[in-house]
Image (cartoon, rainbow over all chains, first blue to last red; front, side, top):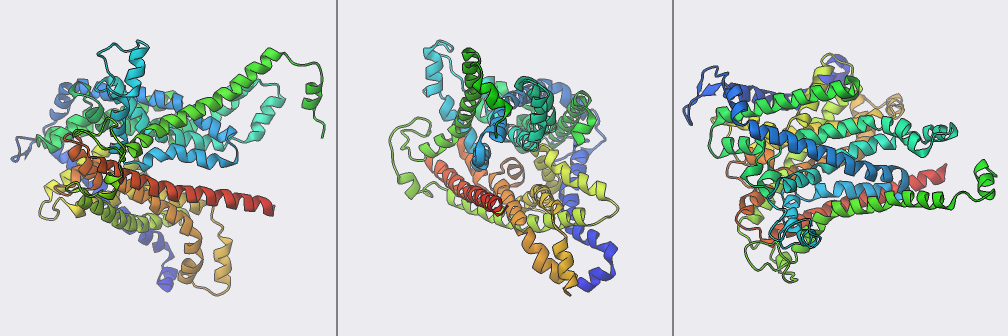
Length: 285
Length: 288
């Protein structure tokens, strides 16, 4: 093998790439083509026909406009809340936590070690009507006697925020960890107040992490259906719930496939808007 | 060493109020960090706590009474053992295959100049930035349109897992390869080792920590995945699919037992890693 590679040096990278890229081509790219093919079909299960049914897309968008809007609203709120919650925590870990910072970092990753569905179900216990949170909020009159938290938009957004929190926190941590402390010293030497040093040095240097964290949180959150299913009611349904039900329950594959494509297109559009706001070079890295 | 700061400290006392304010501000961040960590740990604590509960009705939402029965008879619930076994089998197999494929891609990207590099990077990056539901749905349409080749079940889950894990393996191994000292390989070649021997005896052992870390990440992703699996499982149940199935009917405490066990094993491995990093950091500091 060694001598073969030696004689054909130019081939080596392609041989290394071949198995992995073939797998991605067959089981990632080809399926997307099939999804496109399916989205242009019409008819009722199992007799779908390929009819270049482009009207599937506008139909899907207009019929489920509400669920699309809700998905992007919930994902957007969850992303902003996760950013506000995560930033001070990872700032503390990066600059104030001492030699055991990897231990504190472990606390951020720890939720990943509990199966997604089960950590979502845990919020059922925490937010239950008989639980401590609702009891406390009722006693301070934030919630009325017969009001609860479960099966509301608030519960769904809280679940999404919690579940994707590590995706927000880790990239910000990575960018904060790379901040050269000498830059902060220099800012101090130049009479910047801690507040200004943060605003003019630390915050801009952590911007790539914020951008990466925002994307890593928003994209999966917009396609999520587990939180809405477990912590919400049909009134909180997101587009993921619809796609899931169309594919696996009502077997309406063309609609489900076009909804998937519209979801991807809308996420892409959101990314482009975001890229215009933060600048393209930050987005690509 | 007398610094300007000490001179200032020794001078007239700064405004006491400002100092209190500074202390509050300083500790406010620490207090916040503790609260945030409590928030992150809360559901985990609940999962573990309720694995020791003896629920009164079908649902395990309200604390009743402490018991160890759920741990002793963790597989008393119909189907839970099979689901856990399937999860472990898929996890091990998919991780092995994805780790090999992903490491090879990482080697090619970092070590070689070749045409099509940009396309390769995009192809690796895209699965990570596509919503899971789209990954699951598109793969399902492939399987449904080729029923002569694929039957939904264990192997379609395996295929799906390898597909979405590979990218994470590439990213993890690549990060390590970039900071890799090539002089060691050159030394091996100078001493007469051919490329294959050099790879086996030098490159692979040095890469081993990154490969192991990548494989652990891949295994964790596989064990945890619900969405992609659910679309492509047919009648086969992994542990998350099993939980989804019973979540609307009743959640027995055994589900918490399995989740807690997975958590404890994962956290033990991660803690060992933290301690190891801390020690090696101290050792290298001592050496300097």
